[in-house]
Image 1 (tube, rainbow, N blue to C red):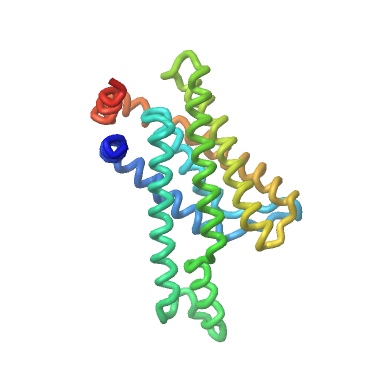
Image 2: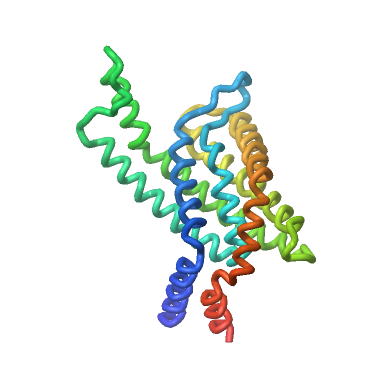
Length: 248
């Protein structure tokens, strides 16, 4: 048991040394940004629809997971997701501490409204426990759905290196993962604490999935090019070698 745990830790260390720093940085930043942007709702002319600004960046999180899954496997992508979620929680703690430090936000300097605006900004960055809990649960579960569905779909594709296969894996897994993420967050947070109806929760999940999927369709080719460069440069060679060693 101890030896297995040591092997897992060793493998994780090799994984995070192997994932290119720019990719991991973009992934973590997108996770932090989408949770912060989720505090702002999008005003829509239809009452049965509800969206938040998190959709502007959440596609990058799922595209990052798809690229990591295709190259390193679903387990590695899920481990990266857990690390991103933990860092996001750490940033939320920093935001919370900052919101409790006496002071004035620069944007609150509006005559007669300083106290109200300053309090609102503190509340936005400080967050509330149920939003943080809901977003974390939704992200982790949707990450597992996205990563393992991506890998499962890949098993039924003949040409593992073509753009067509990458698109098939990415679009389907992203649709499933995004729907899961949006629906879980809506049910845990919006339905329980903001009074959303079940219809709004479902339509939000579907609409958000479609919008985020469209963004990923637009940026899928750059993701595929990154993946090709990783294969060409043999990114993660030490990680894969250690995995083979563990199987023996």
